[in-house]
Length: 239
Image (cartoon, rainbow, N blue to C red; front, side, top):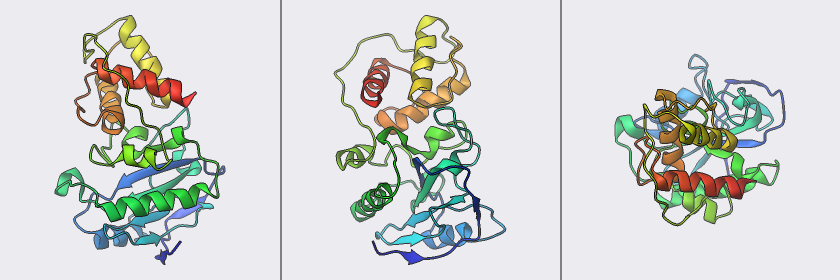
C-alpha cells in the first residue's frame, strides 16, 4: 500500500502482539489539525494510521509499537487495549463539529488498510470495534454514520440482520432477569457490562454504544426487541 509517513513521537512498547483493530473519528474541524495533534509530543495522543477524507493514508506509529489512542478502555476483559490493538483515526469532524457521512473513497481506503493490517496480524472479526465500544461512557466515535455493514460485507467485522423480534423494551431503571441476561450478553460480546440485574446509567451507555455499531437506526440506549435480537444473533456468529 501507499502510505504518507508522518512519524508521531507518541508511542511506547507493546506488552503483547496486536489482536484488535480500534476505529476512531478524529472529531476535529480539519484533517490537518488532527494530524498535527496526533504528532504533537505535548498532546500525548496518537494512532497507527490516519485516513483522510480523500483516501490518503498517513502512517504515524509502527504497528509493532503501542500507540496512544484508546485511553481508559475495555474489551473482552482487557483493560490495556492500546497494547493489543492497531488504532486507525478516520478524518471526520464528529458530533461536535458537524458529523457527516464518510466519503466512499475514504471508506474504500479504510477497508484496504484493514485488509493490509490483517495480512500481518491474527485479528478476529469480533475484535474489529469502535472507540465507543471500548469506552462507551466517554466516546461516541466513529458513530452511527460509520458504515459497519459495508465493512463486514468486505470481510472485516461482524454484522447481522435478524428477523424482527417482539418484546417490551428494557430501559434505565428496569430490574430483573431480563436486564441480567442483557448485561451478560453484552459482556460476552466484549463490553464492560458486568451483570447486576439493574439497568443503570452505565448499561444505558453500553447499549447506546452497541446500537451505534449494530443498530444504527436507533441509538437511544433503550434495549428494544430488535436491539436484543441483534445481540443474540451476534453472539451466535461470534462463537
